[in-house]
Image (tube, rainbow, N blue to C red; front, side, top):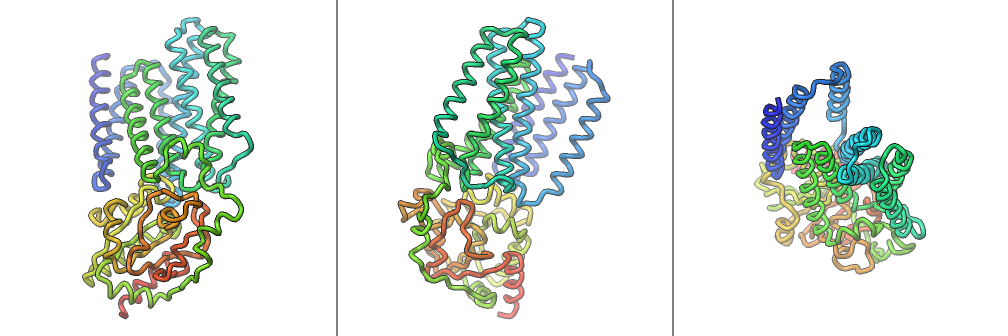
Length: 463
């Protein structure tokens, strides 16, 4: 039986690694998910065969409830709510790791067989898992707009966070030294303070930093899962947690580089907290906003040779990805070269725009990352910006007073013409006004993006 378990876990590890490798490209991401899921199925089956001293009724009930809830959520979730679902599922992973470690600690302390190494591993897992759990729940609430998305700060917040973390660590050291059943009340307080630490760490984070935070919390969940693997001497948990933790860490670093900000500034910088009157600096000096009609936009696009579409969260809100694909096909039939410019932090989670366009079956070879598309904007006839506010804001280049200053952006203002699809003149998720909208070469097509694109597609037939 032990041989069967180890062989099964080896197969699982191989499938996990192959699955992660295939997630590197949108073209293979779907099959990568299936490969990794197959690995998890193998691990689950061989574990059931090896450890059968449990109630099959409860296992079956958990399987059915989990499958129904997960399947329903995956099918019903809208693309606008995909980041919330990712944050929520990630939080469940961190919470599960913390609960397993709590159960192991309780069992060992009750029977008096705990060791210092096991206690350290378990307590670190409880700390990291609890931070990931409550932090992810707060990120979910911010994205869902149950809690204000802008940073929430109070005087001395960093000092309070530091003191709280020190207290948690002191409690942990005390429990490692003492251990035993009498430490259980202190463990309960340790859990509560760890959970509070997660809330306070995410509370001041908002705006364009949310995708980075989701990725960082995902890395913490992987670390908690790997630590749980060490606690249980479970190789597949160690490998799975290490893969999640490493990939989440790499993605977090890449996104922080894309924003030209160090991770500590993202976590502790309270991005989007703007001093009164500061927004006016980025507003572009009170320039004139030029609105366009559907016929104007259709004519511009029809007589262009090169068009770049820049998607943002507004595209997801309008659920207009199918119309974008139809517009792309219409322009391609006219001989227009159409490409998509994807910013690393566009949307509300890593890869949000790639997932959105993949759902509409937009060809992968038309998707260009920021570094690849930026040199091509000066030769582009028209750029169509759909809801991508913060990642196209020129204030990031030329306004030192802007909170966005220094963040690499899509240089859409270097194109010959820019058309922005928006409902109104409200700022983006970061709360910063965009001087692009008052640029003389920019035209605003106001209205719902889905309806506007549909009208443009029809107008193209008349041009």
